Length: 163
Image (cartoon, rainbow, N blue to C red):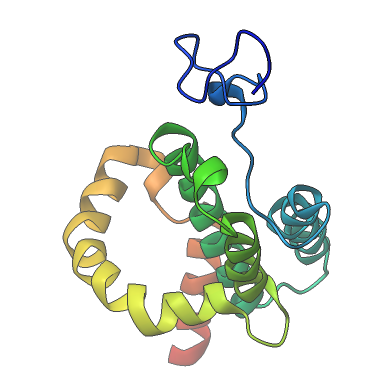
């Protein structure tokens, strides 16, 4: 061993003199996985979401895909930063697994967020939707009502049907 350093040093150092508390390093097999993960989790979805919003005719499928994705993404970011912050440093291949999960959520062939909504979350949400949606509209007051133009249009259509 080096002079002044023991395998069980009182200063918390390793046999070669490096402090053990600074030797944390994520085990990864893909170079620049942090950058790749950032692109998959934030950059690509932001570009796609913006593209959907700028379309002339927005499909319900696209809106559902990206709303559910962003809810999952933000929830994961909060949980990861507040609760699971130690995983990045101590769980081997954590960033690779996270990148694969987010890639599945956003990939145009799989649309994982859309699948999660229709297969798993929609039924759970339906209970709360029927219970709380009328209360939400009531709390919104005049903002919870249909726009006047839509009401006039519906009244005109009904009048045309009667004639």
